Length: 156
Image (cartoon, rainbow, N blue to C red):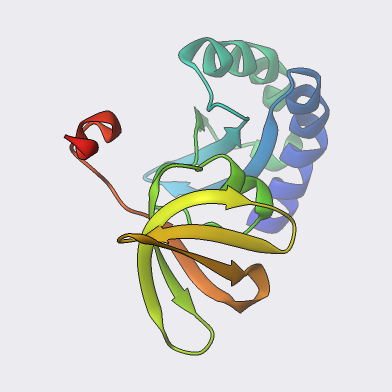
C-alpha cells in the first residue's frame, strides 16, 4: 500500500514543489500509531527556510486530503533532509561546499576533509594541509560531519 500511496502523493506534490523552486528529495508514507505519517523531504540551494516549509505545507495539505490511498487519518510533515542524509548526487555535494565530510571510497579507504569544490566528475577535499581530488564514481558513501565550532573560528 505504501508504494501506491507514495506514487499518488508524488503526483500531487512534485509540480507544487517545482513551482516553489524546491527540489523534492524523498516522500515517505508509513504507519505511525493509528495514523499514517506522510513525510515530504525538500531542499534547495542555500537550504530551505521555515517560510518555505510553511508555504509548501499550505499548498499541499488540501490536495493530499483528496488522495484515496491516504484514506486513513494522516500527519503531514514537511522537512529538510538533515545532516544524516548521505551525499548521493552532485547537487548534494555542491550544497555542502565548505562543510566537513567523511568519505568512504569504493577501494575501502576512508577520508575526512572539507569540501572545497565540486563538479560533475570530481570533488576536491582539503585534508589537513593538502588538497585531494576524488572521482565521484569512487565514492561509496559520504556523510556531513556535525561541527560545533563556527567555521570562521577554525583559522584562529
